[in-house]
Image (spheres, helix red, strand yellow):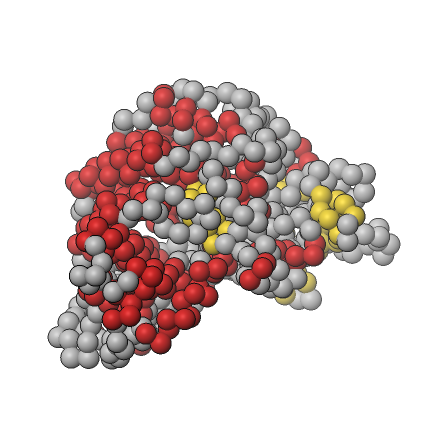
Length: 591
């Protein structure tokens, strides 16, 4: 966490400098006595591990490569021929050596054994976190549980099978769950026993479903073990952790407050990257999510927005004529997370103390579905790193969804389970029916557009719920990977429906037009209105922003750029520089 890093600097001279790459020669350490013979030293050492958790930017930008995220450019990763081992990154092992060094040396007789186990539990939590991220990215990786020296014979070994590595990750996280003593932290910036159990539910759900749906690995027979572990870990948090779904602010505000509050909403947030104005620790969420130039200009797609239910619990796509509803029509009487995730009619912003309408701004959005989930409503925060909101890393809602999905995959989800997980989340979102009993009917839109291989209505709805509840929190691409649904990344980047050219649209229904779509710009323009060119070409170059039917229809974005899923994209390539140093690493399939 940002606020924890400062104390670490006082001990920087005492700790080893690890190698930045696995194959680089590591340096030896300075004297360790001052660190490992006191709890104060151990406390300060484990503080260094927190630097390895995602930064605030990593978290709020985490879904910029997702099926529902239209953005300024197609990620090179998804463009044929644009990404390969030369562009790959992430093969960095500094953090691991630091963790392993601590585990090997946390054995001073001056420290009670249970206290040693507590600190080793924290270290093994971070090793599990480290390896989980590596396995998700690269698949097979070398399992290293020691701080390697210059002449270590294992320094240039080959990679180990992902199944073996994940078994070791599970052993680490089990040790953490059993031995971390801290059960509560009101700052929500420290790893506690229940954070460890929450992380275990995340890891085990991923691995269980990965083994079930990624059949080429031939690990399906072991998926049940991991799913049962996910259930038991989530249940531990649910029954002992003391967390709950926050409903402060009611259905109109409680969801978004989780992402805009300066201090974490402690009833639900379990772990967060904390902003602290007193220490000048800020983040750049507003800048990234409102700037026409700084961020990726991520906007949701219409295909995804269509999955938000009506308030009465019915699918929006069951409404006759939904395909041609305007933005103003389609955003009414919907799951209230929609209005707390993107700008919808009625959204306002503060500017110099004055409250102003806040319609979608087409200098930012390409689809009209402009996110607000992580950004603050005062324009003061829009330029630079000024944000004071803390950024959630783990929250109780995720644990409920992990529980619900794992039990559904196992075929053991009951109506009671549904009510306390998906039902509870939908209730907070203002949905009024279907909260206490499992669904029995397949939504054909959800099945056809997202999960054509799934016929279980409960699993379809659990996946719908996960997508909506955790939207823009960095879970989507890993979910696509474990569900074996990479082709979703090819979906059209579509936006709201435009009935006609040259017709002003009042997007927030305040009586003032906001945007006009045109092919020939009118000689006379309305002051304060954004004019968007959707002609075939602009200055002789294909226009990336069009209407689906040329003069009317859904907005489309970047259909002129080839974007084609390849199964090799389920893993990143091993960076070429690292392969040159250690050819035994081998390359991932297709790269």
